[in-house]
Length: 315
Image (tube, rainbow, N blue to C red):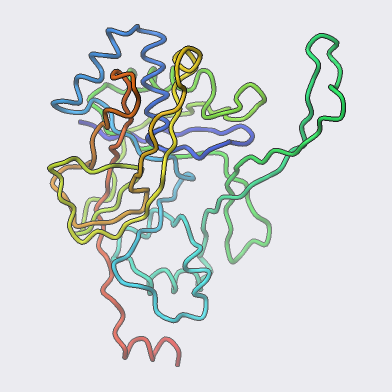
């Protein structure tokens, strides 16, 4: 299997972040709509032997999530900023990474970080018959965007390109085709009113960090039954999935709630380049499943700072 880096461009706001399980669902629906049910069934059947496609979440270009470390942070002066940091430059993963390293990086002139924010927009209801505003129905609706902050620039720089890492047996051209199919009708909810306008900009081969005894998940996952993750430092997220528009019009649109391990969850490095599996029995219709697998990268976790080093930090 090859690893590719797909670069997405977001035009405007998103209703939900680009997450691996939702994006995979878009890919599956794109295959069903363009190729038919038999092709989709063949695609899903491949996961019984070797997955044809494993996706990461979408990260602001050049960044990766801050790992969940095994040890708690020390009593640094900027402890709130350390805890709030969400994404770190990918270059930091070349060396052992831990709270002390991140603290030193945040104090340096090279510091930069990516953060998520919300933006509210006013909306009103339209009478489709008269093409006029319907009564006094006015409300605000929030969307998501990302920005880059640094110690050198006071102005927040808006981020509109995102990296999605793809582990696949498909050739590059087929991967691009499947992603474009997935994004044809927009990503996430509220596409009809302008949210979720995402386009594929480029795809190229990529090598993810592969040195170290620890591993970090790059998306949401549910471990396979025979998958024993050691020394787990977890971040949890609950997904309340929904069906695609065709099924949603004729049956219960909601999947069963699922508890996933989220991006940045860390554990001792496994043998495979991915973790998790497809999750069946998430809906009364037995054909429907959820993607509970994602890529993971290797990294070295910095040893906990000793008491002597802690005193030196505050000296």
